Length: 232
Ligand code: FPP
Image 1 (cartoon, helix red, strand yellow):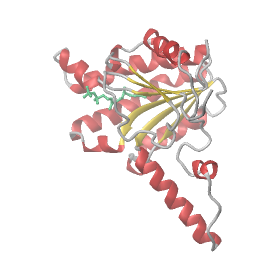
Image 2 (spheres, helix red, strand yellow):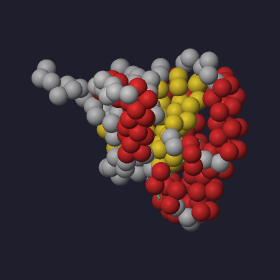
Image 3 (cartoon, rainbow, N blue to C red):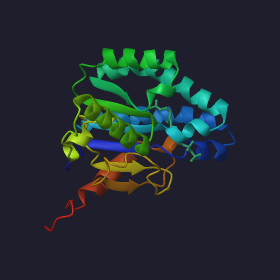
């Protein structure tokens, strides 16, 4: 079986899962952390090199204030709780997104965990936080324009050079993108980076998603023919 180098997941369905059980939405997010743990350790075990998880979009800031606050607190707590597991499994932790909107304390905790796990060579876990695809392309274009101004000329740009301006610079594009909960949308996620990514939609709501479900996605991925627009 071919193991994808980079798996990305849009973790969807926490709210519906909680509602089905008669709980508040935040209960769904908290339960979703179990799925994050199971899937992350599984990916490290089978040799995935990059696992990126869409935890919070730029658009999610418009959710009710108590849900946003609860999600940020959950991020903070999860980072403290999972620190030892990440270190033990040699997993490098990174956050990618528009960090301008994060609180100073959360940002400090993120930078601390990123530093502590920087030597993790088995797998890189990337939490996409306050991220959106259009934001990423725009910030890349702005930085490119600023570099041109500083250089006093238009600098050469091609796909590879432009990718270096994206927030995901240095991270290979996802081979497999999984979205849970039956929704079949890209929702302003990695728009540039998923140009040739294989998409897999699972009906399972995120808090119930486990390694067996990801195994199914990887097995499906193995039956795909990736042609990158070419003829075999
Ligand atoms: C989408 O479900 C899920 C989120 C917006 C949050 C995902 C966050 C976690 C699982 C918790 C922490 C993450 C890490 C990496 C520790 P939804 O609320 O949109 O669900 P719905 O579509 O059913 O309303």
